[in-house]
Length: 284
Ligand code: C2E
Ligand code: MG
Ligand code: MG
Ligand code: MG
Image (cartoon, rainbow, N blue to C red; front, side):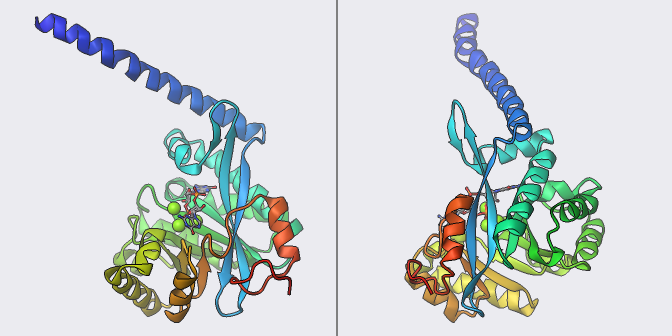
């Protein structure tokens, strides 16, 4: 009877496990091919600078139009890329493409690229950045690196050295999804970041929740105590825009200001030279 149950159990369990492994392997191979065949795409989202009242930075976000599975979002393949080491090739492609687009199409605006914390674990990060700057001709002061954390930053001394080395030529470093990842108060102390991006899970509920507003006000105060540049991400409503401006945040990003769009569409927005986030259809 145990044998019987066991067999039934295996019949349900075994094929799906095997299938999962095969599917993952297949996706890994397809991702490797897609990187080399230039089949990944970037969409670009504006970041609005509160002080100048203008868009000052454009963030690159990756997409994978998969032939069988449709448009894949980063959450569906970045973890795989991190696990398999493909993240390095993927990031090099993102850095090269975003830098080139910035030089050709973004005028004087900065470009922000997302880099996984895991990429700081092996040596070579500094030379990868020098290489992309040399190849694209992008001024280092126009490049921002947003560190997103599926794993914690380890080895503070080494990471600090990397950050300082690139900061000395003008590259800026932001810690992404602040409040939701591994980053904590001790992080702000340990690493010489230029700024933080407040995670959207804190930003979105400020419309309705008093306690969410109190948490946000404390994080903003904390950032200011460390003299950090503060971005609120996930600004979806006019109320949120007004609220975060009143908190003296430095920059705002979110669907209310602008959704991530392909390069062609971004160029149209930029050519309209919109200065106010509240009337994006109004040319100067
Ligand atoms: P992130 O860097 O924090 O980017 C913000 C995410 O929130 C993006 O999702 C963006 O499309 C979305 N978003 C922007 N404004 C709003 C809003 O107002 N409301 C809501 N609900 N969402 C908003 P996306 O594009 O799916 O990217 C998810 C994450 O994947 C990114 O979070 C980033 O951590 C990672 N990622 C994206 N591109 C890359 C990349 O090239 N390399 C690496 N390593 N990671 C990437
Ligand atoms: Mg980001
Ligand atoms: Mg974020
Ligand atoms: Mg994120």
